[in-house]
Image 1 (cartoon, helix red, strand yellow):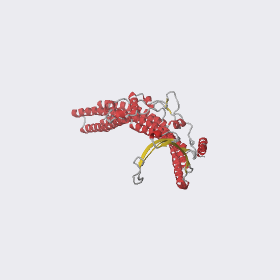
Image 2 (cartoon, one colour):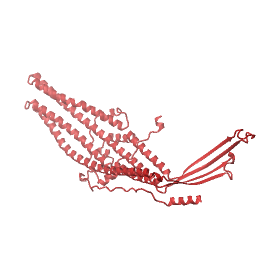
Image 3 (cartoon, one colour):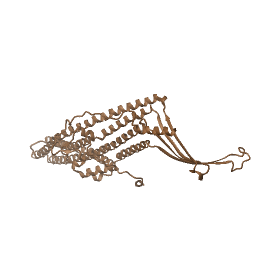
Image 4 (tube, one colour):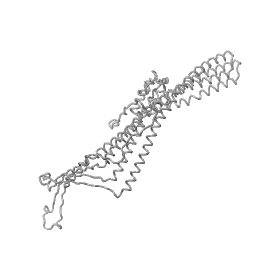
Length: 479
């Protein structure tokens, strides 16, 4: 009868497709068909599907990005967390299968002479040997295990998306730090060149002072402006050093590892051509943070089903196949076999209050995950719109400041010629030189900000990012 009951329950379990709790449905997202600030497509537009650093045409930057993807420790942490989530998922999947264990034991017991008076020592000794295989299988009639696997799968997908998001962040940080470094080096060049020009002006004023055609006041004013310009240099040098340290750490090196390579000034990478952002739907499809939020919402929905399944009984089918004998040599002989088939029902029906509390907690966690997903969608769209408008405006600013820098340089050259010819005064020339420094510094700064805004747009679009993973360090490598 027990066998027939077990077969009936097993057939019911196999035929059952019921899983309590809500099924996950991806929320609808209201998004515009196009971005409000999207540039008009043209032949010069660059698609965001390509690795963004290649658009700058700088081999040093490309090499640094490759190093960061291979050795950055934040990526190693994200990779380990993804592996951890996948290991937990594998464990959850094994719950769908029977748990099988093997056991063997032998025992020898001897009664005392007082217990069995008159018996020989050997007659007071008894031996027992047992060996068997035990199987236990929870029949997933109400989908508790299936919901657990569903939640584990979604959590593993979220961890994989987190890894991709970490790649986006680290690669963007490397590129941004590199652009900042080259921008600082350009601003240093401008400051040093202006300091040298103002030193020549001071030498000219000093020569006139020595000849009696200038005053000590003129020399003092020229010296003060030279010193003010020179004072800008140490702060820029410190910022340059910090940028080099940051790049080295992002690529998995000690802070001083790249000083020799990066201290040699290089031109700022050219600003990429107009970037084609695609549609809002494309962005939401590519953004790993949105994918992670969606996966976590899926996992939270599945956990509601796990909690709900505790309202129903857990049915377990167990079995034992083994042998028992008084001597080890007699194991597995005829008439020594043992067997057991058991059907277990565990139903804590008196604990409904706690179960419903857990269901309510899971439902609230699902509501929070839904809000988090919706917020991640809005932030993704905002990031892209913000980056588009910043990049468009910085291009316009760049054009104005380029003309201002050229005009201020020309004006400073003319002012020096006029001062040497006695056609203008020292204060006018110093004012023109000060304007030259400000215009050239602003132009160097806006060029760096333009490239940084392009990087910000690529990060917002998250398209074409590499799927390569950092190389795992083995135990043998550390020895």
